[in-house]
Amino acid sequence: MFSKRIECLINFASDSTSVADIGSDHGYLLIGLAKLKQDIDLLGVENKLGPFLQLNKNIRLNGLKDRIKTSLSNGLVEVSDTYKTIVLAGMGFNNIKKIIDNSIDKIKNIDEFIIDSHTNLYEIRKYFNNLGYKIIKEKIIYEDNIFYCVIKFKKGHEILKEEELEYGPIVLKEFDDVAKKYFENALNHINLILNKIGISAEKREALIKQKAYLENLLGKIN
Image 1 (cartoon, rainbow, N blue to C red):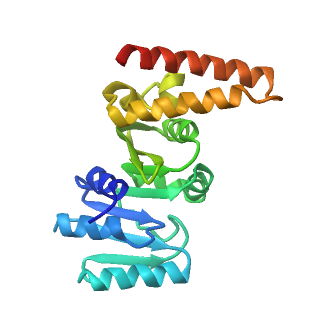
Image 2: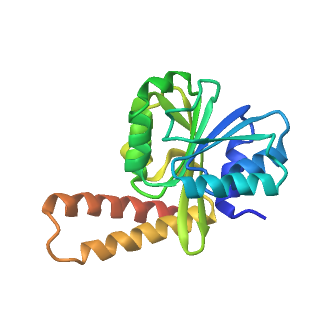
């Protein structure tokens, strides 16, 4: 039984033929994909020995040693061009950007990125948009009192508005109960910041604009 977040990652990657999971931790995504599909090439990458050994142990315990390859290496450095879907999950925007920037020549061969960033979703969407990828799937997940946003990018072009960069074009369009709770939480967070002393006039103005947008958005569905 996987967590909601891992289940979402498995679902987003399930139509791929080759997946490299960077920072694969316990390998649950790869194990789930291997059990779901026979015709899929899987690679787990870890850059520290401890997690790498645990990853291999979990793969062996699930009887999947012959199905899942592993690599003790940094980011995309040792990932071959045959892997068309790259997963970067459970890390922040700065680490994600650093991993890709360090192997920027490789993106010409990468069709899809599946991203679960714990910080700066605005910057994530903007960064991949500038790299020449469009959003084809998005989902907000609420688990253990934490909101996660899983995003699938595919090579292509799209123009995103500021609110779509901030909150996600598909999240805004599909708008389920979890997304509603996510937006309510975002609105509460903005109100808390606005009540603080010492924020700049520029930041205050931007937050007031976001607040009005969210209040209007939530007002339409309440």
